[in-house]
Image (cartoon, rainbow, N blue to C red):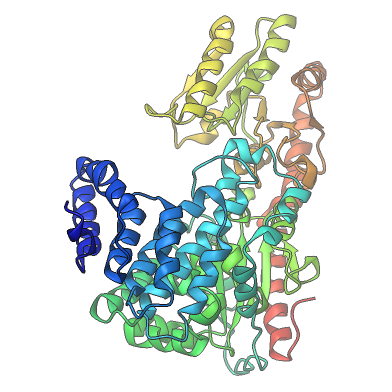
Length: 580
């Protein structure tokens, strides 16, 4: 390219378009030639015109030579050149680089300068949402180099989780994002409307598709209490909102509605009005109910906390993984009237991560998953059951079946009759490097014990499988409620609980299973099993385990607590109080 062409108006922008197209075609030669021949020409040129510096800024940006970009922009800042598109492209690229550097604040400040101008606001709104998500994910990495949508759930980061590290996340967010998020914490201005005295309480249950697993019994207890229940599959609502954006870009996408913050976030009134146009049947369902109950603290919880009308109560239930996700950071906690956690240690994780004044121990509660455990019988046992351990869904690092093999090794050294049964889906064919290394370690540990280990395939006849075991293992590093253990206990199987290493600082598993001991080492767990196996009153012990389990975990207790909490929360909201 000749020296005179370097100053020809539009050359830089045209090169930018060519390079972007080449990249889409996976042709890296174009950018390489620009870096090797054209950028050096700009650096050595003596030209000083405004078009030259615009072209130089574009080419330097393409080659990610940020010093040259700044030099060119410095010259242009006092000129009359229109470089809005260039500045935006630079911002987007720098925003992507922030995902590895964590230096988001400068880019948020740039976005804030666009809010009162003529810039493309839908584009800004979406970029604010993307930057917000990236900022939270970066903070959740706790300083480690990982790539994941939920960094706190990756093994290397999970091992660093503690009350202190969780409390460090929010203060480490960019100041502008922190300020904008604070703007979004808006309680209702007035109490909700009183429910009509001549009709039952109305509850709308909302959740994503595939996340209805724990709702059958919950729905039954609500209906038995005389409450009317309807359901809203949130995925349908999302598709309707996104469809409006395809026909009119000024309308926000669902992504925008969930994750944009501060001045870019649609108001509650605008968000709900958009729903009325995009998805009238969902609007009618929400208008019909007195209470929205959101199952799982994920996208639906964020949306309803932001856009639910003030005359409707909002209660959210958190199971486990959501406490480690990004979604609670974007929730308007001041609009959550009640929060149910299925285990105390999950609540502790949540409150340490999202320590906002609007949500505290005082206005949350812990209620077990609602389970009809009485339908599970006291299983008859095979002759070998008293020497058989069982572990369900074993095939990953978190379940830690190596710990189960460590226990088995201790037992076999005392008596070769001991056996471990592993049931569930085996390891996937394709594993991450981390999981593959763990799998290799598992196989190495398994080799000398292989004749004492039985791999049972996935089965729906779990009761039949439990007849073959006398002990159910919980060897996990992290659990919420460990449902398979609770159900086994209701069938009279003896639980053997590891003190979950990643949750021990939050009081688990003792807070979940206060009637049974927990062990830090395989040796201690094996000693407990050996002592149990030598007791003569095995049937009485199993019957006692079942009785304790029903008393603490059955629907007869949790169902009453569930209905009472929902009624009480809605009643207090009606008179202007949160649940206390």
